[in-house]
Image 1: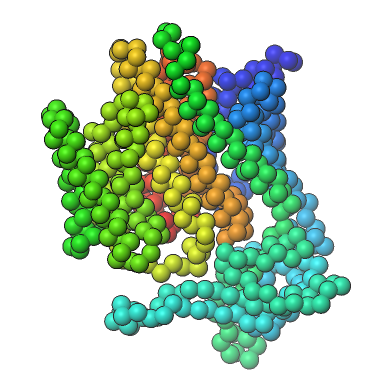
Image 2: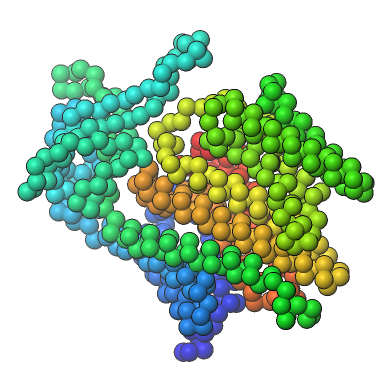
Length: 255
Length: 261
């Protein structure tokens, strides 16, 4: 048993797993984002990632025991990232309509809802979030037209998509917030993203513009970010270590 | 593929020609001529960065075009660094690398000042892209520095120096690739909702990172004895870098979130 653990957390296994994982990543690149994500959420792949995380964690602990802190931080960081990802996957698998993990809502100005939907046309009901969203106004802003735009007779490119919403959480006074691309809103463990928009008609056959907000709850993110911090510290220490190893020392000149 | 008939374009082409002249003088063994061309190329590269900054009125670090200009100007200090720190001569190789770096800036990227779409308006844009561009340049240098290691035989001192310099350069590049990857993941979480999308470019970048991870593990296990395999691994890594940069960006084979890049 000890021999097996020593082998798995050893350098030979590390070399092979690096190259095998690299080839596997290339394979997933050929699948495309959607199919790759679906492939990786299969139970067998989750188990494989869990095993890999355990082995990498073992390497980290082994390095820690030997006082190799850069290696320890790097490997424990990788293990944290994988564990955090698995946690997020688990949350998505065990999500219920009372506590959904991922879904979207399409809103026109004035709509009030707490229901999340799924699917290409947002027709599958996913669940309800524990607060309501009212879309006050969806705003699309363009850059100012410049001479090139005027000559081409076109509008300037879009500068900003903004959904101004009123959030009503139980036990709190409703408040107004803006949701923009690159500026998600965080409410009760959900990140709310400005995801998309489109043109449609309302019930009076009048043209309207709708906005699509995506809601994501991922409890694994703090662990993933902790892993990122460890990885950064590890790679910095590692690089410093490589530069230190270059100093002329007793080993110099030995074959 | 367009020719830039502007002052900016002129400066880029002048720098490219000076880089080529440096490499040719190096190949022919004219050391003084090479040093002169190399210094002139640095001045021209710096001038094209400064011109860009004055012309646009912002620090020239906002898009890929500007980053490639900066990287070309960074080559001279980098080669000085290799000379001081590792006592190796990388001028001819760096000059050739400069030609490769300036090619997209001269012929592919547009110099038009673009107004950024909402998805790219983020303080993480520049650190993410800058880390990757600088990381890729370091990895290209690491592979070039490792060239003598591929030979079957050689002076032990020279080999040891080249091995160490390649490892130090690759470690710096690895740090930059890691920071690019992590910053990209954090940005992905803020912009697209998730830190990992299994987007083809993400997967290729991860594969590249893993290949270099494999290199460091391999070098650690086998030491200088297996220097040829280790050096070959640096070239495999560079192959992955080139594939990530060209194949993903130029072909329509992989469609994904990074299509605008």
